[in-house]
Length: 474
Image (cartoon, rainbow, N blue to C red; front, side, top):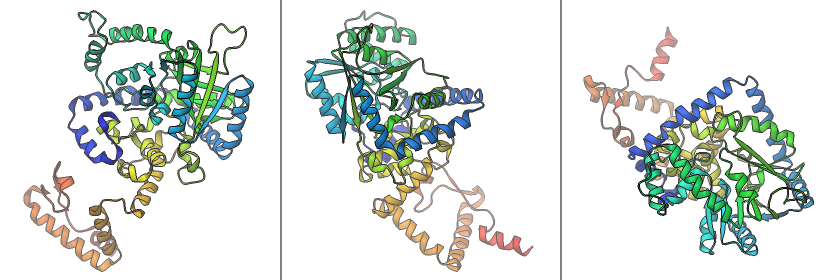
């Protein structure tokens, strides 16, 4: 994680993020770009809600028959002349990729944007074994220069402003004219394009992720807005696709349906600029393409989610809409989560991948306002699953003692209605008395987390129960 952050230290990370003005300024642009763009794109597509139902049903059906579709996908890849490798966990996936790279004599590899390679920590593993990975997605390239991890699954450098990018380029691209103008985004883009073009041509192996795996044809599909995915998989002699098992869908037609949801939900585009289908290595007569084509299918805890209350999470198509609309993410950014996957989808997925003990805080990184579910193109019930994780957190005694004691005290009162009424009436009277003419309290015992940032309004009138009783008598 960036700066060594982890999910265990989420509360500390969140406090640090709230005190970081440049970060808060950078992520404030999400509303005017990604959120507004999605709204405009969906307003222009009357059948969007029907497409959401269709997409949900496709993914739900596939998950019910996941083993059959994965075997069908493998069969088609082999028929096309490719290879399929099965990886149970992150360590096995990294080892398989390294073996392929070493067999190809690779010293440098280019990478298309892939959250799965971030999930398994592939870059660090390759570097430790003498192979240099080069990120080619502009956002990923920027954070690689900064030795950071993505803070968003579709906009990995959303937390960085252009002045910071210019400073990083001057620090790393020392072979270029130090007097060059990097004031405009276009100049930054041109410089990155020139530097990366050399890396594309020098790469021995290209590694990409996949947005979809098609069982019907054995094809992998990747969408980008920069074309880096195409150059990553076409120019080197070897192409490796590292994808998780839930990316498979039955047919090309199913991909066409879900594609209509993906870009609109992610960036507000009708389609991404580049959509690339790859089926096996280069065939006789093909003008270009890799000589070897490998697909590494990663499980890493996903099969254990099947048949559980978290199975619906496997419908996720990584559009990031839930993240863009989450008030918690919009307040602290992505690195505070300490996970490759931030926001609501990450708070559900991360405990499944890494264990609840290492990520229990994330279940509480939500207001449960429901915006995430309302915008999810796959209709994933994220708030419901976050509540499931909170239940498991409580059952395993992972909830902080203060919260457990508070809940125990509340339960004691709530199960004794007369005592509950007496205590709440006394508390309301006490708060109103101490608040005085101000009508609010700046300090309340056991509520420092609230009053440290804002006053607590004192109750006015009676309690809900007393007011209800009065109205009932009328």
